[in-house]
Length: 78
Image (cartoon, rainbow, N blue to C red):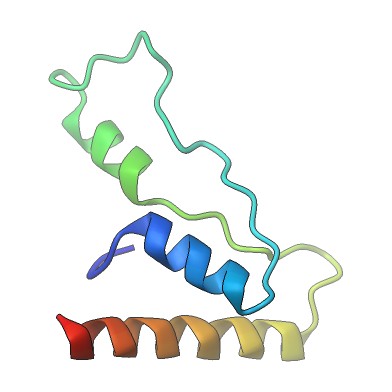
């Protein structure tokens, strides 16, 4: 997620009725942030989307449009 915080997008999608689970939201404690800055950056920006074998094309379209709308509104208020 760029242009806004992952948490904001996460909660905005939940408000719109999407079921999200925050997986892999932090690094394994033994991984040093200074030695692995890219790993740290990714751990702060990745969002797992609700896509699985039962997801329909319509579900994906709804999700894509919701993300586009949220990001567009975020850009307008920035």
